[in-house]
Length: 288
Image 1 (cartoon, rainbow, N blue to C red):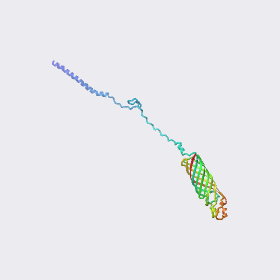
Image 2: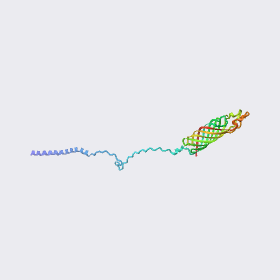
Image 3: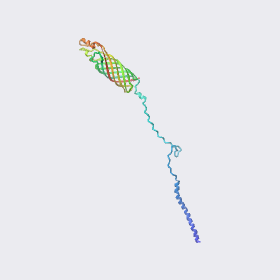
Image 4: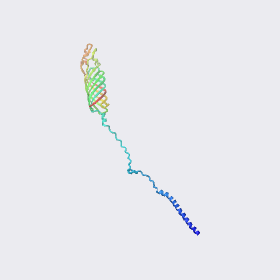
């Protein structure tokens, strides 16, 4: 009985130990399986894609605004032509009255071509001064001019009408003039007729000249402004002069008969010659 009782106790304690080990084994297996289960349950991290144009903003219901496209650079605009008003500012008026003044040098030879004036000399150099008035329509000029040619031997005054034509260039405008008029003396020096005067002459006789003058000249006008021009001129004039017969001179001594027979006192005379003029002229326009 004793043995059989012991035999019964051993199987019970073994079973009890086996049952006690079951939770321990189960817990160990649970702990061993738990990390792998967590690893399988963790979601894989995926890189976030950039938001597409037109996609809705995160957390909002409004569509995202597209980024503005860069503006293309516009081509450079061509330079604008000058305004007509600026061009007209320097353009002279079509119609204007003009006033001109001149100063220069003159060389006169009154008997260069034909000479019966009976002067001791008919050549002289001197100073030329003049003033002109006229009307200009576009390139055409019509006017009058007065000149004083004061030389070492005689002084000649002239009144002329003139016609000019200006070439279409600016700011330097060449102008060609033709003129004709009346020329007369304002004084003749005693040295011009000295050889015809008797000795002891107290008051020399009055000797006069007058006649026709025709000529041409070129004027290069620089437009300093819209209404003022200045520049050089050069001209050539032909003179056709007449000398009336003068009265015999008054002398302190009785006049010899040969004095009255000299060419100067016995008859009138004529001379065909020329004048060369060179100087500076200034012209002002008065538009209307």
